[in-house]
Length: 112
Length: 117
Image (cartoon, rainbow over all chains, first blue to last red; front, side, top):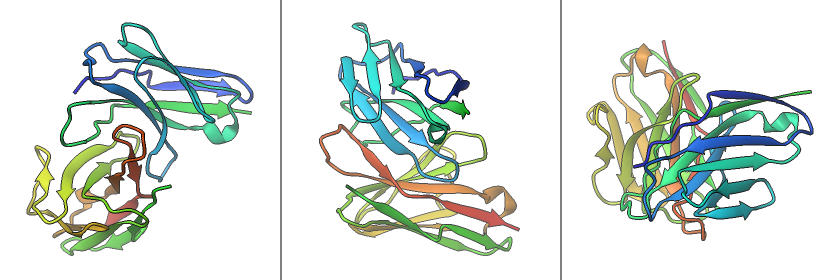
């Protein structure tokens, strides 16, 4: 499974756009990039998944360059409720066990 | 959407006792469920993979005799912490996979906070 590296923490202010970058240099051809969000004392929640280029949903955008060795989660106009830990995961396309391996995550603090 | 529940949401027990945590997929059948443990300010650590009708697969370093997992049906997996000790105090989270169009998306339960006195 490809190892991921993210900043440990980030601070932002309400209304700003937040970009969290994740590096995954050893990503394999069949791997997908997935981001989860976790609030304190809750289970993680799926945010977005992508394979290449750009993916956008109602919550976030995911930018993946051509070499796929990194990805950037973009949260538009964050609010206080976006304060959480964000995990970048590389999900193996050939992973028969379907297990997820969580890295350290990025602790985002949104300030008023 | 797929919903996973856990019960209890928190439990306090005395050292040496056993505690059972239930994980249920409420609106879908889950052939495979996963159990994670999370210590304060740390990431989730996979403990074991629970397969319906067969023995669980434990990650390296996780004692299978201490953390008993039973996946008796397609909607229920249980984790029993036997002879719990204070160092077992943690946040235990289960998840289940569901085919939703997202590759290998897992739905997580709300977690169970275990405190061993």
